[in-house]
Length: 317
Ligand SMILES: [Zn+2]
Image (cartoon, rainbow, N blue to C red; front, side, top):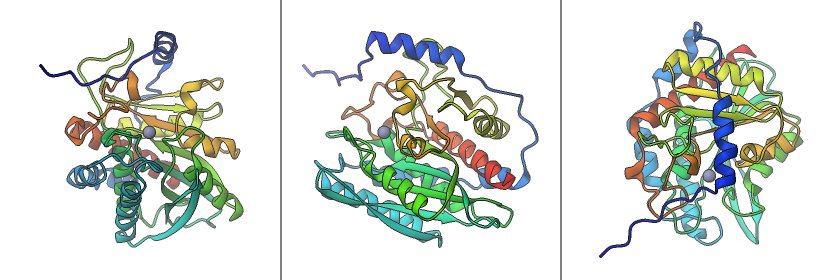
């Protein structure tokens, strides 16, 4: 007799709160004309490369402290792919619980003066015992592809793509905080920081009321109405019905769950793009979060939508 895989639990009080949030999600205004450069960028995302990155990153558990060598290998893989784009890549050291890993930060230059930037951040560490295909090889893979396709002459703002360690550790976010501090010390202003946090799981069997199971969710701190509007419209112009957004009127625990929090704490607008974590994915933080559970088409559409949205923001200046 075999034991079934454990399934990510959902506490009842959290289920009720999240079902309330799902009711507030909005597709925003109908998709408008997307700038040609943004559509081009989205169209250049390579689904085969996304799948290859997930397989490379999610072979084994790679917790930043418990599996230090595996986490280092994941970071070095991501840093190497970023370097292959030809972009300038800076390694920003981050230390947590006596362990140091690098955050890899690539800058896609815009034609403005370089002060203002859109930040895309994704953590490359996993929880212990979990290969971390959805959480968060899917987010890192998207960041790597977006960094590859984004460079174009029309961008006004810089886009900073950061793959960071130490998200999956209580009291962590040391990687994202190091990047936020590095930007701040450099005199940069962040127009919005977007955390790519689990972008690859879709299902026909939603776990909570209100989840469609097949769209990407964009949840933002208060004050992110305008950027969420731009991101959602761009994603839905590329793939209709693929993204819903929720700029929150007040801070709730669900919006604080990823690296974008470090940028919020630094005083900048911050949002998280997610498939819903345990509220959708039963493999969340389980040994079963493997590459085979990723929906390649959903992951491609999620990445295309984010790419289009980020380009739209950077084109606006
Ligand atoms: Zn995560």
